[in-house]
Length: 83
Ligand SMILES: [Zn+2]
Image (tube, rainbow, N blue to C red):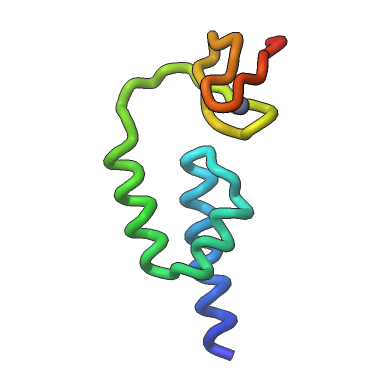
């Protein structure tokens, strides 16, 4: 039974961390539940390595990668933006 509590607890931590960073919260939950304390470490590292520049970004509808808000073409998959 303890394993369920453990999974939910770390899943919730991953969920919150993912939400705070604008990531997919469901993925954060699963990653947190599976990695446990390791997920926290991962989030800590990712927040350190993330570049500080607050450039406006948007998410590509085709490949879900983050691209600059002014971009007309996705630099990852080549999709063109209409917004
Ligand atoms: Zn793309």
